[in-house]
Image 1 (cartoon, rainbow, N blue to C red):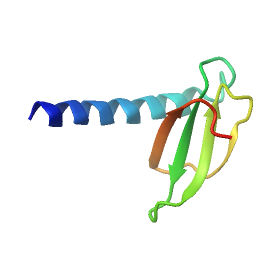
Image 2 (cartoon, one colour):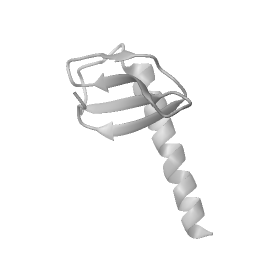
Image 3 (cartoon, rainbow, N blue to C red):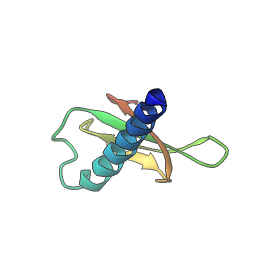
Image 4 (cartoon, helix red, strand yellow):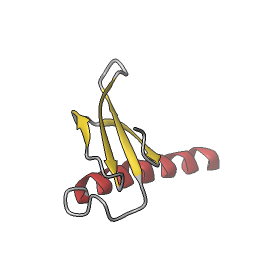
Length: 74
């Protein structure tokens, strides 16, 4: 049960950090430690990327299905 709670907390933190990064990206795109959000469609194909602190705004479509990674992906 404890592992399930920890996994749920980790998932909430990842989603929250992704939303916070997306919300502040336009104001301070090159201010922070580099990170990227990769967006997926329903089939699991990559449809967009947003990179924060990388000097490149990214490309594609923003969807609800995403994954946050450290560093620049391109």
